[in-house]
Length: 469
Image 1 (cartoon, helix red, strand yellow):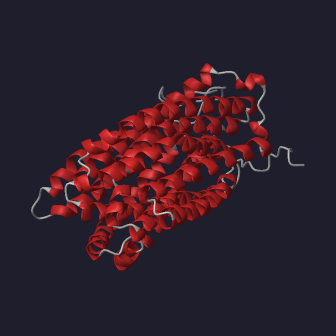
Image 2 (cartoon, one colour):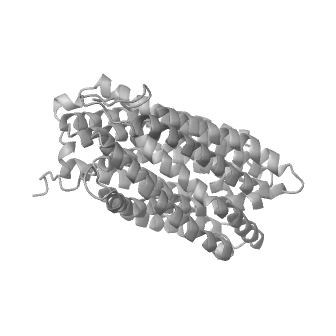
Image 3 (cartoon, one colour):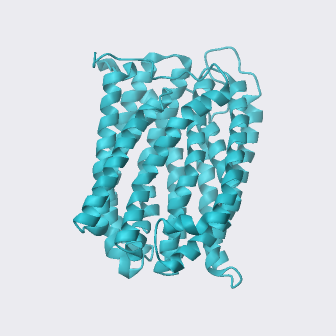
């Protein structure tokens, strides 16, 4: 019985209530994303409380660089997931299987090359970012080990993106939960019992990523019928590779540009010393959790819109966006008083240093006023990625880079704002990015979603839309 393939793990989102479908798909993914973030959170909490604030700053100083390396790999894989969801919505099972194999070639090839380059240049990148000298050695060691684990992250992201494109958001969750528990146990063992410090936390994370990736992919191969591939499916398919790269490269550029802009911001933060770096690390870890409901909503919308766009149901794409905006707004309003009233208690989870706690709490009060803008970015991104709008991905990344190049340096240089310009600039970046994202959606909707498609075998739309049929 163990080798029987099952199709019940898939979810067709082209029929039924959009809100119920999106929530049903999003809840397991949200839980999974939160557990995935616990990798970094556990590292930060254990390192910050048992090794010290300098060690916490060492881990935090690598965050934006790690994001850059991961983004270069995972964006192309995300493009493969979008193409897969559109073929699934159309009901083309052969092309779904072709996508599964060809996305693997792209994603693992990218992760291998980027991993080597990242390992070699990680120390130079951190030095160029003016990472404080007293944390540079630990930060470099932590980052190099993360680079080794890059292919393991790609392994899990590949398996989970393919499963989610087919409407299965539950299977990736199961393996993430186990992996997070494993990561916590290994963190406690390596950091506290063995006294390995930052290096121990990095090793624990890499091992856990390997376990979750290998287990998730193995389960998918054994249990999901779409992963039953013939020799024909395993052949490189230039058309699918082209479509995946056509969508994935702009996504990689978007994520990479955002990562570079975060590196610029981190450089500004580094200039204010270890206390500011530790506070920024703590608030960044907290806001990574705040990002998760938005990110999950966007990813759910991407699958939902991809399937419905493939099925030529444009009205359901529009309805899904409207319902998701309401859900996003409600969550944003609920989180505002939490950050305003309980910021100190939340930051205290990560570190015991009073100066860091006070700085971090005030920072959370600043950025929480902009959560609606952050949610708008993710919601619009989910819709436009799902329908294959490659131009938006690049433009959105450019906006964030420009904002983070200008506003952090400008605001922190002001005698009136000073240090707090770090977090005000984050809020302003979210506002402008959210505004431009919504404007792009309004334009795209008017040109390509409201107009009824012609009754033929091709998807209509401008030349930047995904044409896979």
